Image (cartoon, rainbow, N blue to C red; front, side):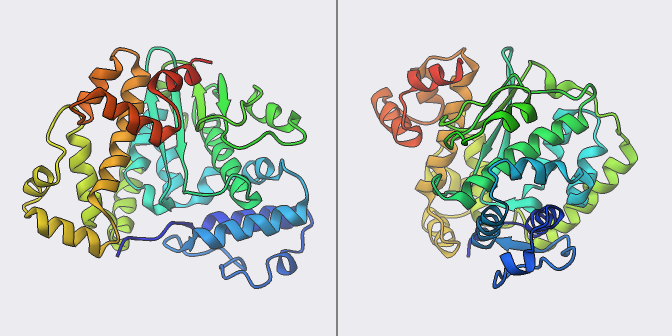
Length: 339
């Protein structure tokens, strides 16, 4: 079976702790929530997404301040995320910190992820969240926390405390925006097409002041061991995704082609994906959407060329699919990122 959407139990624990620091009786506010909030959870312990969002709903109701996710993130350090955080602070550059931790993202969360994009115009850090309702206060707060936590991580890691040039958030603007402008150094764009932190070009090359290659290699190995213990990377759906990523340059992205690369028949691959509650078409669609946006953002390829690279033989079919993925045409998507 495919792993459900989860997040490290450290995160709801930190949220509850931050609420306690603000005078909230979390025992009362979070009564009945099935989560380990009494003490630091085990590093390998995860909470279901539904539980995590419930923690946010209740805490936000008790605090009564839309800026609380900002303060919750500012109350803690990267080291509070255990091995994941220690690995990041031991890397040589921001880009390396991203690449190293990205290998072990399932130690932090399943079903959601960050992506780093770099070009001559900017260094972009994009959050692809779980599926959720933007009108849900718990989901909104969790998204706010995710973005500000990455902003804080980059500022704390990067020499010179880098600040974003622009911040884009998918949800609506809060009643009071000043705390958000103070946090990011710029006023965010709300109701945007995605969650994005946009930094000056080559920000990913900035050195990490706490770089230690021996500690980096040690924590990298420890993260690998912990991920192996969780069964990370063993799922067929993960193998299919990796194969499709390698095919996003005009290669064979058919089920038959991927099955052959994995040493399976197409029917066996379909059956094993079904055992994990996954479908080949859905994985292919996700990878195509991700790489279509990535190629378009580079600005060096036409939409028709991008269509070919991600496996469409006819541009109109690609335009229709892109509209379904993003709610925008390729041209509208590029315009939304030009601001």
